[in-house]
Length: 285
Image (cartoon, rainbow, N blue to C red; front, top):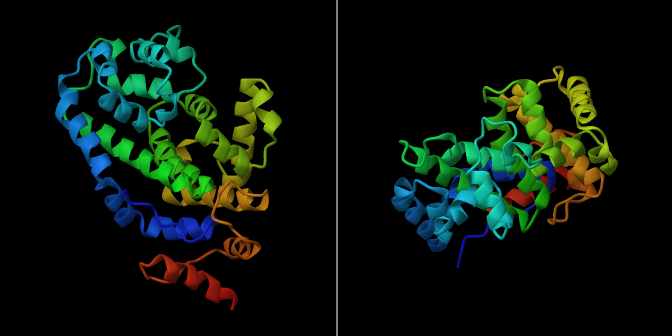
């Protein structure tokens, strides 16, 4: 039986519990036999893969590759995946650069099949993809209990990488808008309506910059490379998500929202889920 993440509460208080126990929970999750088999196979075989066709022919390798970029749910789109992986990422007219979903571009850049020399044999390549896959799989498992916390986990990982990349800040914002999970986090954090996605893309970028300036004192994506700005964004997202009705499934209550608005500090150092939940409840006993 695979390890199931322990999520005793939702919202920002749940996020604090999850991040405090993340290392041990992630390690237990990664050690599950099914996870271990797939990652061991990837580590052993990916160095010998030099073409898109070879990768597509091995379902287990492809599963890890797609999962690392949050594309596991697109596994059935074989033609799109193959064409994206084979795209020249430096050619603005290539397929992967015309897709609104920038996860495909990130995957194509990582593997490099269409850019002349694939990166599959590079030192550390297998470990980087495996680490991304494990993080995404754990976030997905968290999402079966609380989808808001899943988005928070995915944001902490993907936004940190994006923030510290060497792209221009405008390109980073377009990447945010092209990522379903990052877009949802920012739109929720800023209280933007569902119709926002329908306006001109350049206007969307301007709105994001304006809202970010107002909320964080700067309009850049790069600032979220610092832990305090990242945590402030996630807290804003989780609190507003609860107020709006929530996207999670752990039954976050008005009490937990109040805890979050007051700072949401979880001071208990216990490692058990039940004790972690109890430490929050005692604040209002």
